[in-house]
Length: 302
Ligand SMILES: [Zn+2]
Image (cartoon, rainbow, N blue to C red; front, side, top):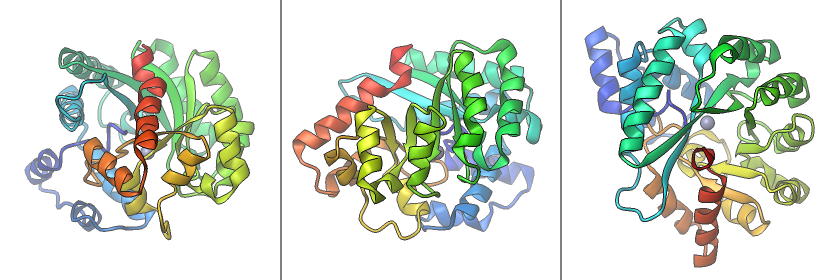
């Protein structure tokens, strides 16, 4: 899930009130549970991000994120957290990189005290293109904290992954694992390209891969983990129809459930599990979801 999309709505409303800023209609509509186009999501997501102005706000976001995890579960508790340093520090100039890392460091330490492991994945914006990807790396590679383990693209799947390959290569050379949002707001073919041309080792969403059996086969053959976020998909993916999670699992794809942006699109992990069960998965398939979540979580490999 995303740091910027994980803020608690009550916290956000309070911040907006204090700043004298009205909560945009797009965000109010998502909070009411309405489905809207991706552009409206970006507006809602940006509004919340605008309040990550200091370390304390970053820590509040982390507290909201760990607070949504199911309590009393027997297995390990962990979060792979997508964070957009360039967007927060350079583009919006909300806080310094030191403040961002400091807030994450303290927030992650607090999460660890509560038995939750957190790993950070740097998020770059696909549609801003590879030059932007290099700027993200320029900003952070000089002093990467230990908790940063990966690099990913997000946003609109507007730029081909073949063009992103040099950025991914550079991130990989710096010791980072590579993920990409693909096959969400773009075609399933993007999933194939991200893997084949970009060398991506984890796919976020990937639901459009279900359009073509050979793309599911590629995911299964290469043991590529896929983060599937049913509530987010329902709210953002037009003409989704029946959710493809059962088809993906039955094709052998290593799917795990995620919440994506629960501060914008209200949901929690327990709810995503209930949604998955409602799709007709049997006990064995639910067990696979659980197993892949544990085996593929980057936070559990630290
Ligand atoms: Zn996402």
